[in-house]
Image 1 (spheres, helix red, strand yellow):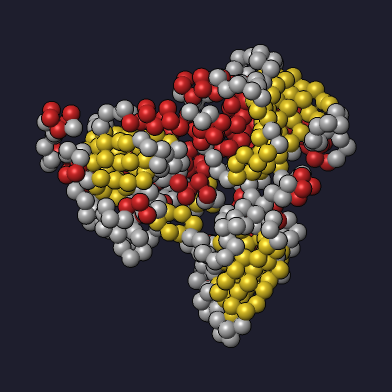
Image 2 (image 1 turned 120 degrees about the horizontal axis):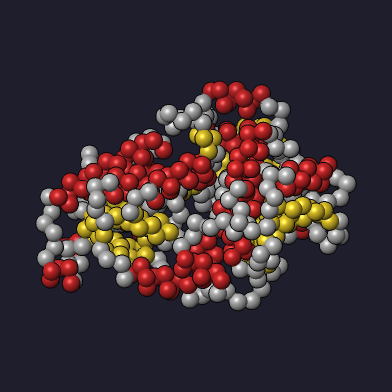
Length: 528
């Protein structure tokens, strides 16, 4: 089941177990059950603290694996074979159930322990989804900490009847005690905020009490991480405030143009970025979004950043690295059916449309790559491109045209997403050559039409381009003194990871140069 290299690595990890872990495989006579049984038995041979049994309880999904702590009674379950991106979730579940310390601050652990009531989570995933493991792992940690919490990862492709009955068309989809709790990527702090109504208020109060920073970075993607590292290495007080660490890179699968690394995946790169940042004395404030910035001249010499949570932060200098997000079609029905057939990540949600007809909006590299990936899963893919030519590389176009289940329609303007009130059933588009309105019957629409900068909250504060990008100078400086910017949110050409990292370093060095040339505030200003 597992190759020799993975076995060796897993055996090494399991040496960190401190208390016994019980594995219970719920199986039947299916081939997947056979694979799961083999996996469970292999794991059990790797540590004397792991025991394995089988169950044919009709009340459990089959195949599934229960990971139970003999010390605390905590239960974490995997319905399906936890391979692909979810193999890491399995490894961490074993370690945490066996008493290995978690990388969580003590306050968060105590908050999880203090949750009263019974919480039974069901998390539907696809094994090709790079965002799903973070959600699964967050809920699994909660289950390992508090025995009143359980979580089961469910492979949507394997339990298709459940997916269909619950009309799940996007992953991860999280159910709590039988009711939909969350859909899409959600961080542990956000989960706790939804479960504990006072949590967000306490966090906002704690953030507002923080002393002023020398450099505050808004955004946790490649540009923000690079900026924080370069600033912290100067020995100055540095902080990062971000909605999520990693930004758009978390939604990127294959990365093959990051110099010195022949091939990697977005989540793996983000993990390395975060680990690198945490090597320095950087205050990371996650699950927080900026809503307003106020220049130093207006607030006593310090730049102020207001957050959506109500918290306020102050800093001598500021680096904006807010990145970008998927551009939307902005047509009727798109928002209504978002997560119910309208999707933006083919790797994450593609498996949920197995054997169905889908459309891809956009004929650039992202769109044609998405069509090629989906063609191996779905019945048929129709690509709709607004222009009269495709923008994708010729090699991608050739590959797409060689596949028997991809059609490409050019000069097509999508005008409406059609649904039955519960899920997408088709789309309407206009043939730009004839003006004729046409319809396609399909189950899913994957939007791949580029990115839009996350800068709406900056209007009126710093100078923006007509596209909404932050206009920057050679040192990453903006129109507001002491405020710098980097990455995909700026006018820097070519939105690439390596370029974002470089611009983050430039902005940090620019901010440091600004600081050493700007007098430190006096006591009266500090008090302000």
